[in-house]
Length: 60
Image (cartoon, rainbow, N blue to C red; front, side, top):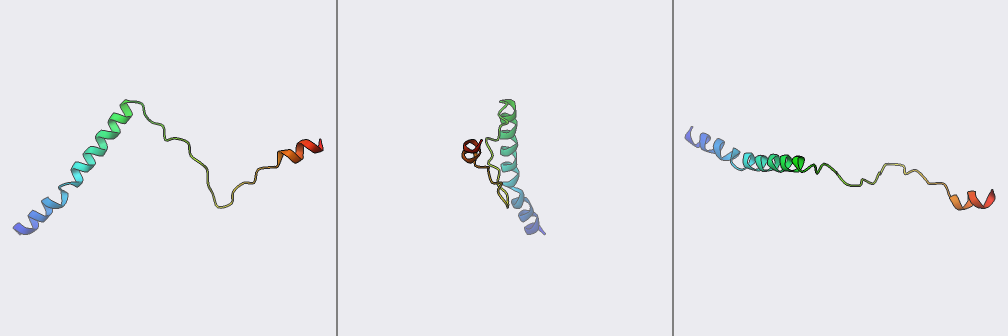
C-alpha cells in the first residue's frame, strides 16, 4: 500500500508543475495583449483555382 501511494504521488509530480508554467505563460501573454496567431494559409482537399486575369483583360 505504501508503494502504491508513493507511485501515486510520483505520477503527479512534474505534470502539475508543467501545467502551472503553461498557465502562467498564457496569463502573461494575455496581459501583454499578444493574442495574434499570425497569418494562416488556407488549405483544403480541393484548392480553388484562380481565374487567369491576363486572358480576361486581353479579350475585352
